[in-house]
Length: 184
Image (cartoon, rainbow, N blue to C red; front, side):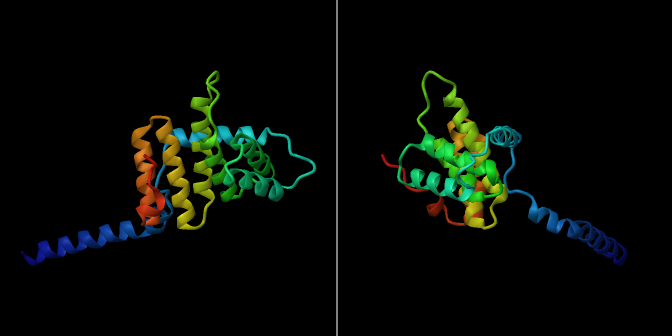
């Protein structure tokens, strides 16, 4: 290679590197998964929660603990979801509550005479998206994305479901922890 060509190639590499370096932190902060439908689901759910009356006698922590306990014990998922929604009406910045709400929506058996078959997975997707956005730990973000993937799968949105699950595995770096064995 001639010296001038080498100099031009080196200059080109230097300019490309200089252009990319300032984007580094911005790229690192970008979400690993994004889908416009999920963003709309989250916005609709936010509006529904803000429209909820705030319970006068119970604080957000008590409502959250009771709802999470009901969900963990496998009790009425619908009642657990109502408690978690009431908690979020008071404190919408708790990622764990959003994650629990997403799991509660997925655990509810839809009423066959209503549109719940379609609504519950959309609500779960919105709650999981909020949990993902508010979570700080990579494991919490991965769990939220796994729940989001399940909600998208129930809606037959296969490509976004796969992308959410791939992002979850990339964050958790442990597929076995994210995807428990399915009972046959």
